[in-house]
Amino acid sequence: MTQTSCVSREGHGPVVAVALHDGHDVRADVAALFALTETERWREEDPFTATWTAIGDTKIVGRRSRFEFDLNRPREKAIYLKPKDAWGLDIWHSTPSLDIIARLLAEYDAFYATIERVFADLERRFGRFVVFDLHTYNHRRLGPHALPADPRYNPEINLGTGGMMNRYWKPVVESFLSDLRDFDFLGRRLDVRENVKFQGGHFPYWVHQTFPHSACVLSIEVKKFFMDEWTNNVDLTQLDAIRCALQSSIPSVLEALNQVDVGTRPKSPSLVF
Image 1: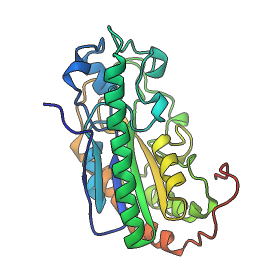
Image 2: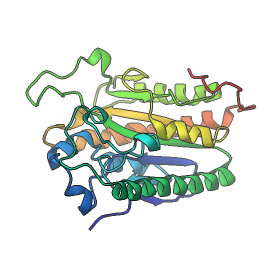
Image 3: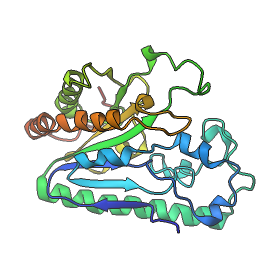
C-alpha cells in the first residue's frame, strides 16, 4: 500500500527535524515504469535519517521515494525524467504519462502547503524556530570494493548554508559547527565543515524565502561512513552516536537563535556566508 508523501508530528518546542529523503515507497503505477532496481533506489535515498528526527520537537519524515518526486528540488525539477537528473541512472523503461506527473506534482504541492501551515504555526507560537534538514550522501560511488572518495572534499558532516539569504543567522551556524566539532564521537572528533560538498537544496531555500525572519535551516549532509551504501547494512552504534551529536548542539543553537537580531530583510537575496 502506498503511503502518504510524508508523516509529521507537531511538538511543543521550536526545534524541527526533517528527513525528506528517508522514504522508499512508490505508487504501483510509477513502480511499473521503473527501469531502476530497488537496490539502486535504496543507494540514492537516505535510509535511517528518520531515526535522527528524534531530536526534534516537530518531526517531518518523507515516506515516498525521491525517485517519484524529490521534495528537495524545485517543482519543475522534482521528477527525474532523464539520467542527467539522477546521477546518470537510467530511471524509466517507459516515461511517466502527463497524468501521472500531474498527480505526483499535486502531492509535492500538498507537502509544501502542509509545511507552510506547520511553520506558520511555529512562527506564531515561538517567534523563531530552527530546522535540522537531515540528509546523507554516498562516498563509494566507484563500487563496494573501491577506495572511498577523497576525504579532503568529503567531510563526515557537511553543513550547507547556501540557501541562507540573511547573515544574521551566522551565530546559529557557528554554534552548531563548534558543538559538532567538539563532540566526543566514540572517542574521536568528527570532520565537520561548511559548504564543502553541498550548499543545501530547494527546501531550505524555500523555507528561508517564506519565513525570512523566523526560520533558520541547518542543512546537514552526513557521509555514509556509518553504513555500507551498497548493501544498506548499518552500524547501529554509530547511527545513534550521530543522533547524540546532533542532539548535543540544540541548547547552544537555541541560545544563539534567541539572541540574533534579525533586523529587516536585506534587499539582496544573494547575501550568504
